[in-house]
Image 1 (cartoon, one colour):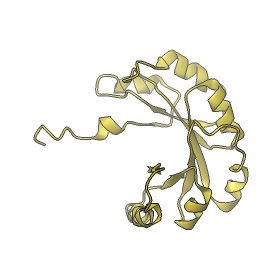
Image 2 (cartoon, one colour):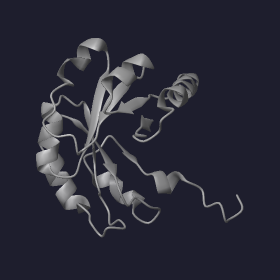
Image 3 (cartoon, rainbow, N blue to C red):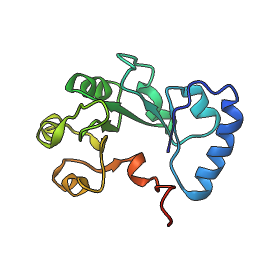
Image 4 (tube, rainbow, N blue to C red):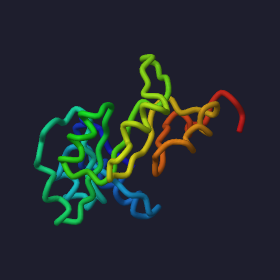
Length: 155
């Protein structure tokens, strides 16, 4: 689970509850872009969003047993995340999304080729294209809308 709530004033109080729930369910909690907060709530790791550029504050986190992951949308951003010592990268958007942007399968595989890092696919994944993920160079995928149930239809 990635906690990326940048505007919440009661962040710490909520985060302690989330951290406890994650530990109970054996989920790995990653805190977005806040090393001190991640250490305070004993998170599994830290998540570096794609908009964080050339920040090298994350290099020594492996010493503190904090796993560093990030997100990227281009080859330049992939290289930035590798320099920031991310162990995994969420690469997106793989399929067409609301902004009409996408990497598509060929571009995704070209971007991940010869990179010694784990990649996860994000963006536009639905029941019609999920089978296409098998031909990607990925360790997994994330798809919030895909996993959310339609509340209008009975279960």
